[in-house]
Length: 525
Image (cartoon, rainbow, N blue to C red; front, side, top):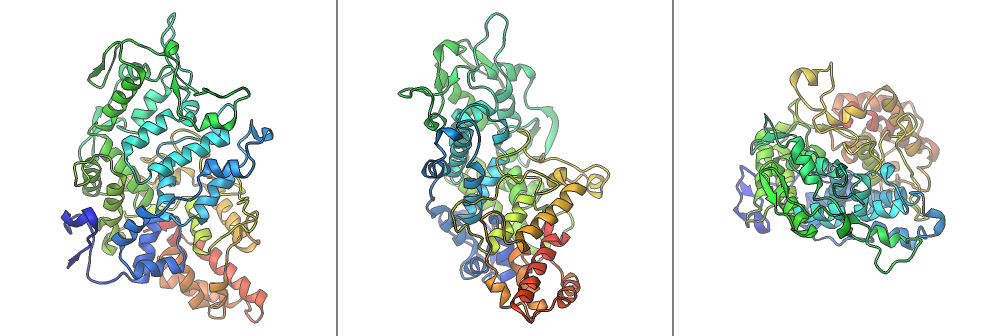
């Protein structure tokens, strides 16, 4: 067996990373890209086939970033006064990158991080909310292949997080009042250490990680942080949402702060105190398995084995060069692990994940080269479950994301087996019908807004229903729809006359919608 090697991977073994004796098949490459991207076209599948997984990952790490969300809003006129008190333009730039940009692993990671370190445009108050959210996405993108500690620090001082979790303008205790505890609670519960003590493999104990007193003490660190308005004049321009928050010394709690068994001494400066607090959380033994498990859930499987979590957490703890929090090492560990790559593991009924609605939409859009000829990317907010997807990026209803990572759907076989199925938390009769109807409109209704897909590769196969379905199955579903189902679908497609251009296009539309609605596609294996 030949070990996949690249750069710092040379010291790892086949017990950690996938070994291969041959180039991946088209199905294997498509399955890898289903985990590593938000959708891939046939050319991208072939590119992985001609290379190997590790080399593809390294090329993604080296890929240049394109124009950021904040800069795109500025370039497209959203700094005009008419946009001050709304979030117009945000959806446009979000879809622009998620659908079209040529750094698919980075965009996949941005979506995953946005569902862990949650900020939602629906909860942003104050002027220029679209610029605050855009800058937040730029932070996630900048650090998607960086270090989690750097990401945590920049997230904490972003105006988006300060506004969303209500600690911007937080003041020290006065006359019996206490500082707002929102961020102190969530930075522990959701962004670093979680609720329960974990072992190195992410297996929880009954012991809680923090107490109410830890929350109230940590909240004192997050006082005095405010907009940086230096050099700006009223009314404040969008620039205020791009700048990290700064200290208002009159509002900062200068006393000692004791939490999680450590103390920040009285008189410690605000920035030193903040960094000490974040260092404490970052270096907590819970943080590697807690964050690693959630990233595995977003990319690969909802119920990773403790051993899989342990291997990824080990990469988080030490990238092989003594660095903690290296997200490149974490991504390599997630995507190259034998549990992710082994087809026998994938066949197990407990392996895999429900594709969230946004990912299904993006699989179609990226798989068939959707573009916006006018450059507007006018897809909009897809949050309505009855008429759209029931989910839209950067529009989570709460800080707990669209769905909880540990959600177990009651009254199901998953519940009987104790399995988490996070995405089922937003799945119901309304959303199931809404998804299929929306995708039918997207596929067969001349696109969404100004966004159009390119079906030229499929039209060439339309006269042969089996060949057409095989191609759609590979590009959209990584070959997961079984032969028996494809045979049934081919019979249905055969009833659509394909003797005219319109007939051939109807066949293509039907093939796409049928595969996008197939349960074997919706469950990513």
